[in-house]
Each structure stands twice: as C-alpha cells, then as structure tokens.
Amino acid sequence: MAKPYDHTSMGGEDREFPPTQWTWILSGEKRDALLAELCQAYWKPVYCYLRAKGFANEQAKDLVQGFFSEKVLGQELVEKADPQRGRFRSLMLRAVHNYAISVHRAERPCQSLDEDHESPSPAGDPEAAFDRAWADGLLHEVLKELELECSARGKTAHWCIFRDWLLEPGPQGQDNQRMSDLCRKYGVADASAAYHMVENVKRRFRAILRDRLGSLVGPDDDLDEEIRRFIEIFSRGPARK
Amino acid sequence: MDERTDILRLNDRQKTRLLSLGLEPDRPAAMPDGHEQRGDLLCDILRRPLPPDGQGEPAAITVQSYPVFRSVAGPPLRELLLDPKTDIAVLHRIKEYAKAMGQKAGTEAEKDVFLAIYLAAIAAAKLFHSDRITEHADTDLARFLEFFARQPWMPTVLVALFQKAISSCLEAEASGDA
Image (cartoon, rainbow over all chains, first blue to last red; front, side):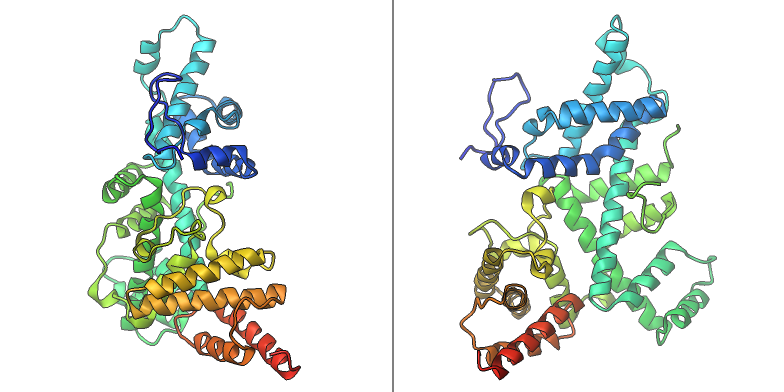
C-alpha cells in the first residue's frame, strides 16, 4: 500500500501519489457517487467565488459547469486529492482560482499572469465568498443533524426552545419575560428548566459542529481558528455583488 | 433559494451567534448525567460509518473524525441499522464491530452503548432478513431488547426497531421456533 505522504516528481511539483484507497475508489463503482457529492458540496462555494471575482451571473454559472466538467469530473482535481492531507476545501479553492485565471487568459491572451494575480477583485473578496458559502453549507448540515438528533431523542421541545431563544431573541432586558413566554408555548414547567434545555442543545450543537469541522479542515488545523475565521466572515456581511 | 438554504433561514447575525457557540466551553450546569452521556455517545457513533474491517479501536470512537465524503466512507451506522435493504453481511459486521468495541470499552457508558448497537444489528437482521445472527434464544433476546428499549437514553428510532424485533421474537417463541 502506498504511503499517504509519498512524493513524486512526476507531473511536476505539488503532486502526490494518492493513497491506495483513493485510487481504488476512483476506479470503482463509488466514483460517480463521490463526484456527485463533490458537485453538491462545492457548487455554491465555487459559484460565489466566481461572482465575487466579478463574473456575471450567467457567466459564473457556465464557468461552474465548466469547472466541474473539466476539473472535477475530468478527475484532474480528484486525482490530486489526498483525503489524509489538509483541507480539500483549499484544494478546491486553488483549483477554481487557477481555472478562473485560465479562462481569463483565454479570453484576454495578452494579459500576463501577474496582471491576473494583481488585478483587484471587482466584487469583494472571492476567497471569503467561497468560505462563506462553504460555512453556510456546514451550518445547514449541522443544524439538520441537530434537529434530527433532538427529534430522535424525544427532545423536540428542546430544539424549539433552542431555536426560538437563540435565533430570535427579544428586546434586551426582557429575557425572563421572553423565556416565560417560550415555556408557556412549549409546555415547559419553568424558566430554569428551559434554560437547562437550551444549554443541553447548545452542547450538542457544539459537539456536532466541531466533529464535522474537525475532519473537514484537516487534522493539524486549529478548529477554534477556523471557527473564528467564519465568524469574522459573517460579521463582515455578504460580499458585494 | 436552493436546497442548501438554511433550514432556519438564518441571517448573518444568527450565523455568527451559532458559530460562537462552537468556541464556548460547556457550562457545568449543562454537563451530561449518565443517561445524557450514553445518549450523546450513541448518537455520535450512529452518525459515523461502519469503520473498515479491523480498524475500530475504543480510543478512536470518541475522537474518530467525521468522514469527509459519505460516498467514500459509506452511510452512517444509523442508516445501515434502519434500512431494510442493508445487506445481512453488513449487519453481521456491525454486530461483530460492536461486540469487539464493547469488550474493549473503558467505561460502563461505552459498554452499554456498544451493547445497544450490537442488539440493534441482531434486531435488524431478524426483522429485515428473518435471519438469526446470534446464538441467543429468542426469549433471551426479547428480554435484552426490552431492557434496552426502556432506557431513557435510547433514540426513538432504535426503540421502534427493538419493539418490532421483540414482537418477532415472541411470535417465534409462540410458534415454537425459538
């Protein structure tokens, strides 16, 4: 079995032989499913990246289509990927960045690579737009999982109070009144019990979020740092379009 | 809006608040008691796929990372146990995996949780394939399942699976097949 970190000079720098398991997957029946999964997970981040790069809506959609057809479905990207190494997200980001440059070059052949790199982004921060869309997807999956878990554990009221309390806060200084209202709405005995239910669901949200993110950002990445980056991106508001 | 749109239609402020939860320490008041702990651990394990043969270690259970690609790692154990189309060989593997993990478990909570998964695999084999993958008699099996179905930490989907398997065991007993 090939070692996960075996390097080779074949094909230029920044290429590694994928581990045996990965090669087997690509040649096996799971390949189509994997590629479909990649398209589903990364279509929106790639689209948002291209929009933030300044491509118009229809053009960005066409480019996303081209990117997945040529780079992802064409296996070039997946063959470079090693699930044991770092973030697949970063690989995707680099790939779409290079793809956007190659498209730009094809359209404007006289423009130099430096110009491509240095030209200011016309519509915001493309990398942040990519990460923002990716984090959106992550939050969606985590909340879906959390709701499913609450339901399976007979904690539907926990979920509802968590949702209402955390996501739809009332006016400041009226917390106790608001929690009392929620208790009445969901049949909870008192505010103390309701606060405990919220904490309970928060703990599970945290566990699921960190569990998911932990594998997606790579074993050596700092989870807290990654979460702070997403907080910072969402604090900034949406990219200009 | 596409299907990736948040199920709660969150705005940026709400997303920020949610993400901030990921950085907070657990509050002492929210620390799980024995039942909560078992429920948490069971849900954490059921979210994950069946590990490749021979690669499950107890220490890895609590820290095993979530699979990046479902198409590579396979469906979560929860789906495998509840899907009537899951191959009997897979259920057998789940049973053996849970048995091995339970034997190596370091805490009572872990032992209980793996025993629940062990029984769930047996129950699924009985219900979905009418197959017996255990040497336990139906009467004993029904007793074990009843005990676990009553546990407050058991997810409702497993309780339902156990209850159907109990009925199947009792029917077999009544017809003299036990």
